[in-house]
Length: 528
Image (cartoon, rainbow, N blue to C red; front, side, top):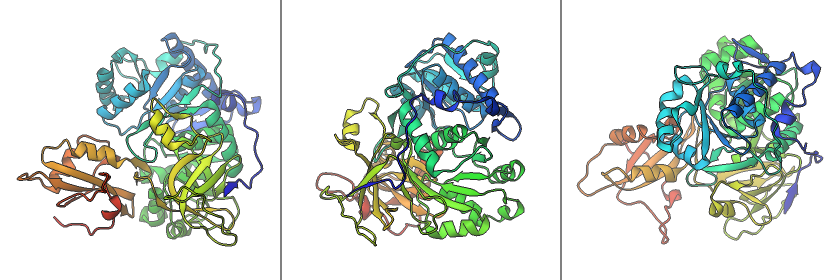
């Protein structure tokens, strides 16, 4: 059965992201605060003026429509200026995880064919190392907070250059090129057009009631599509105020909520755990919070109940993935009949269906009850164009008639609300970050002591899931779990680090050679 949204369809605006978010400002909007970090702030008028000036400056440096610009800047007013400046210049933004190693950065820069790199002084050493590998000259690296030898944000804005006159086709021009592992495997460039992002802003605006009076916590990273389009773009589209925090630090997070009187929290389950259980929470006044939306990983009903006992607000849950720009489902506002444990109902202009994993046949509806489980497929104007330069992965993810495989196993309830019950995809979700097992396995196999490797998700109360490695050592080789955990930690972003190691005689595999991860999950943890 094909399920359609119970919301009325929305008309998708026809402009590009910049035009629809900042190009629609009225005189009354200009003096509203658009973004603050608690110390500095930008009004909407200042944000647009600076984005235009930034566009003019990078255009003068050779950036033109269709070029790709890498942006590796933690959440801050500077990120917002650079992001909209890049779009205003007609270029495409590829956002880079602030935790990436030089090797991971270089891989993304090369794949995306980035022409310019924008970062901060703290991340400059890794940026320089990666840029050298792919041939981006050091002079092309912009350091927004300033350092010798590199242009700063202030330098570029100070040039006072007008934004270039460019026209892009929102239906075909790529606005952003974030990287996602999809349902499995290595990270791939997700091609999202201006129309994809604008469509999801319009869709989300129906289900997420952020208003001009709201102050919205922005700690989930803007380099991730959830932070970028749902938190940053939707808030600005609705003329709310973004309150940015460059990384999750519980005292700073709580202090900003209290001092800025934050009204809207977007969080992932690890933050929910902290809010529900950490004693520090009791020392702060969080009474300004009226609504909490959790995403990036499923949150169970018990955790949601514990969270609301500490922060009495309305709690919503959403579902999305980078390939969907990102949201397809959210809990309807004010509807207590749908369990906290549900990811909610389909957004406007969304269709979805559930198919049997083995047969591919549609799972029938179950009026008045919950359906059998199956993989959820989604179709809508927010679905990606495909994976950059990877037609095979694109064909495996999007059917010829436009259905996008989510890789999540779900059941559908009587209100057509959806419950995620398992994950078909092999991705590990560590604190909301995607960790592809195949990438870790490939790296582990380069270690001379390791003969074979498998990596699976292991449940963890704080992180949701952690990477757990099962390793087969070479004959005669010796290596401790601690040594191997430290070895891989030096070569990978922190969120991808192996947290548990088990030594076994052989990795279970199918006759075709595929790792049988289900046979490894749930095994008792070894003590070393």
